[in-house]
Length: 127
Image (cartoon, rainbow, N blue to C red):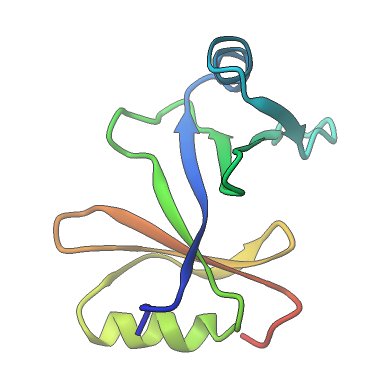
């Protein structure tokens, strides 16, 4: 079902967004961009890697080690509703149902051991 789906992003949940920004920028040397900085306090970070894989950082003060990173599969052909529904029928657990995400739609699921993975598609493709 997902053999031809590529990994689009890796998401980290961090307790302190400024601390994460400083570490990944100053220690690891990544180009880190602050996103969503609209004064709402919901800003997040994006760091591009040489391989084209984006690292995304979202603040969650209650985040615990082991809850991330989360692999995000990019659904370039759309169909997120059908994919999530089909996987749920086969035993995957829906953690977060299909919902709005920046520029598109996303859904989080878990495997039998509780490892979370996510799907993302742009609003340009049919759900």
